[in-house]
Length: 447
Ligand SMILES: O=C(O)C1=C[C@@H](OP(=O)(O)O)[C@@H](O)[C@H](O)C1
Ligand SMILES: C=C(OP(=O)(O)O)C(=O)O
Image 1 (cartoon, rainbow, N blue to C red):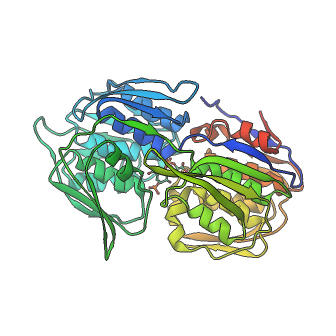
Image 2: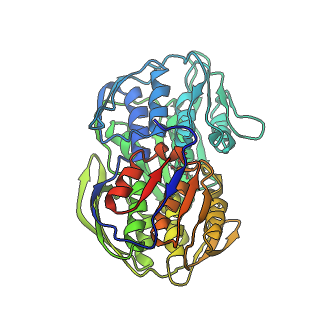
Image 3: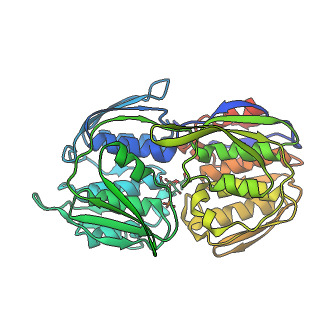
């Protein structure tokens, strides 16, 4: 688990060599869902490649607090979940502490909305500032007795629904391209009478749809004129299965950017999840002239995976295609570092969702880049970044793991030392980030 008030000090100078052969930890989105669905399934689910990050451990602890026996993760990141079926959860004795994890609180709000016991969820100071009205509103439409604080932030509180009652199925047009909101409504739909459906305005990650199917739960997906529509009928059963979690492409992106901006070297990143709804960063970095080769493409546990070979490349600024925004939503802090090292200007629009992540990622990145003498202009829904020479300075990561890791990578092209503050949340998604970074050629000091 992470230590509190850790400060990561980076001592790397001008771009060195980044090389080696690494495996990044398991995908965070799939790891969360494996615990949730395994807990609600009939029988014993075996998960391999689980991400032992704080966010996924928060999901695990929440289900343990509701009476589910879960073993692991062991040294090999195997987890065994003794599912108790859709009605097998017991009321938690106290408020569930979800830590830093938006995915946990939003997906679980859906899963727990149809339970007939009361519960409460809140998290750390970052999570407690994030918008929850986006999930509370559709759940109320489904008849849930649920609320958030007056300003729409956690805690999310449910009184439970009456014994013998079910939620009401709805159709919901998602107001924003969000896999968390889509998943929340669909998971509540498992406990609703009839068919619940959502239409998404842009393609978002489809791990919920894929993994529910792997657990034998029927899911219907259609293309409509308004976007992709996903439907689920309430009352079916989840059946335990084996889940192989692919490597997290979001974590791999830090190393793709490191390999591209380094002066020399070749890096292979193995077993990276290549779900088509997650590959926006690869599209963007390749358009920036990044030499990324995708090899050994294969399927593992219902998800496509591949190895990525990264070579140092002279990057160029681009206008980022808005279609890639939801497909790369967590990767933008790292992509901004690539943009700062590119020739010319990179322009991003249509990315207002970045403002409601663990931090306001547009502002936090802009502040950090300016501290390192990179010229950038902030817009409500994006940023323009002019590539240049990164210098040295002190960066506030605002307790945001992705801001911290992005500036750690930026040190490859900085003229001097960068000190990154508030880094304890790196363990949220990537507990061995510093070890792997030092293994491939960076010099990160943690104190
Ligand atoms: O469904 C998921 O697992 C996630 C969805 C995304 O959030 P939004 O759906 O809010 O964009 C992403 O930022 C988050 O890290 C994980
Ligand atoms: C936004 C993220 O996660 P979450 O919403 O689950 O906190 C992230 O990991 O970048």
